[in-house]
Image (cartoon, rainbow, N blue to C red; front, side, top):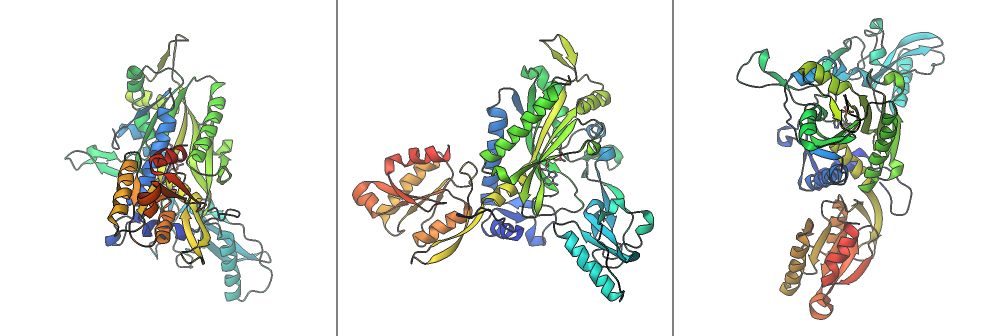
Length: 511
Ligand code: GAP
């Protein structure tokens, strides 16, 4: 959130969720049946916002790049693909159950610490991962000491996640749900892929999966694209589409859900040792530049470089672009150097060659791949967070009034412009405004509003992030054939001849 005149303060997640629901951006899925955890629907405005983000990505990554081509593969693919990719074996999160409350936790998001007073352990505390978990745990530790009426000094708490617990500690760590020890299970691996069945047989032969990433659809089509696309190394294949993960603890609104969309590029490069570091850096910069193109301020984006000991055995480097979400700084976009791993695995499992014949070098090789992988929904949340703003402007009577606005970049705003006749019961105003509305509609998604005072109509558009409002008034039809255009962010108004409106807007919206 950026206040009009001051430093940035972040909106709360609650403020965003409420606005999204109230104005038709995002709804909890299956709400009339009590909701369904980890699934969200995009309403009339949310679907426009999401589409604009996806269009901007496709334009920048495919249409504006000579060496990147698009692909649209299926969600359900041959199950062997997920064995080759390692997902059947290893796409797991550690899970813990509370036997009493039946609540389920991700072990790496459940933190605990022994509570020590003057060197003696008097019990354990546990908390769920959050930005305030240390303070929460300290409060619980003080409470435990009070309850046990122990004298002495509490030692500083050293929180560890539950995957680091020793087996003899499991019985002593309280469940965050009940506050009592003894009900948490040992962590066990839980595969995140959604299983389904293909074909009429109910036995194991029909088991298949909903894709947990779009990337494998690209790798399994590598040969097809090479054989038909006249591509030369380096080249990329881009894909956007649904991905599904049976997350143990979906949370933070659309940040971590069970059904989401990804936008991924697999960028195939020379396998020598010099190429990947340069391409890796170029992709990090390209991704950052794209985020600013859709209105995310550079100071909200960070780089989290994975330390070598945390990389998969085949990975040469991974950097996450992070974003300052209302609940903390978290991964938005992962840029990974995956070496030859994926193509080699598919070559091994399918028995088909994944080698590329390099005409220039007269040589065959399996290329290396650099993969920028971005979640659409996380980007929507980042765009909403960056755009949310509260300020005060004078109301119709000149009194200062609080206003909520979404300062979307015009590129992603659901409506680019709104058109109003000053009064709805004056046919000449309505007719002139309607003509302009229809002209602008040919280029953009345009809002039309005839009800309420003009100030109220402006406020409604501010709240959904429409950058410009055009008002047709009596002067338009009786005197000057001009209209008033009001700017969302500054609230300034200018008078522009009717016939110049489209060009005036075009200059600003498409800049
Ligand atoms: N092909 C690589 C891959 O899928 P990932 O880090 O697991 O890598 C890439 O996912 C991006 O997809 C993440 O940076 C995030 O933006 C998005 N993403 C992953 N899991 C998600 C979830 N459960 N809900 C929403 N977005 C998710």
